[in-house]
Length: 397
Image (cartoon, rainbow, N blue to C red; front, side, top):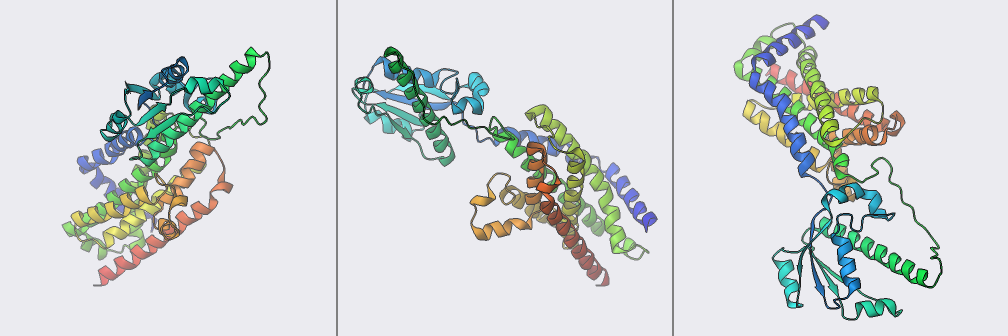
């Protein structure tokens, strides 16, 4: 059995070597995807277009605006946002002042035309209310077209107002020779991703998506190619069993996919600073199981496809869409309806994303994700058995 399986594997390696274009696609396509998705999909918000309608025209209103537009703006000193991304704020800035408005009528036009994402309105007597003990109010009008961006802008503004208010209190107490007193001092610390860089959160999901696409597409096209050329009938009349054929076809693509995974991890480290905080051995074993599950899914696709065109369409549909939408790569599974959460179990990428984030970001051990590893094994065995059954039926027919 071993010799027959190895013979099929050698035959597949020769075919892969002859198809130079397929090799280029297998190794270059994942790298391009990593760059495009790694830089394009980013939940961090910078360079927010801000307009100001200042009815007070006081030194305090100008000071508040200056703190927002300065390169080290509100995200400095010891407040929460400094811990989030102060370094990047110093390089890029968070708010860009695009205009001072002269009338209330201009506000709607700025938001409607997209010239501003947020408009700050300072009421008359803002400075006088600030120092007279009365409540000083600032109104912010945020474009809600993009809900995520609007939420981030609101959080930034809340932090800005909080930081500005604390400075006013300190100055006021300093004039009276008193020390400020904070009853509860909140000190948040973020584990695993201290600067809350969304790219580091997305890269593990991107790795799983790239691997499942390349694995499913490559193995399905390889097997369907045998059908189109008529060589599958010669294999069927040989002493080979269905298991030997499928294992022989799978082994070369497992090796290629492992090499692609190593290249992606290296590129992730060079481009995005992604490091392996957990066990390299656990990462290797988990990746191997995931690839085995993905390749078996591709084998099943080839079993129900008659042409390479059909195989490519089906393999893309069963690998790309579920891994992008249902794996938790971009959209949190916990926020989905209960029925959709159950549906997410149809893709092995869901479980591999959890494993990758545990190993790459958290650095935890097997006790944190052993259940996900078992799910991957079940997925792999299920589709392997299903592919053998379908293959035997097609041979008998």
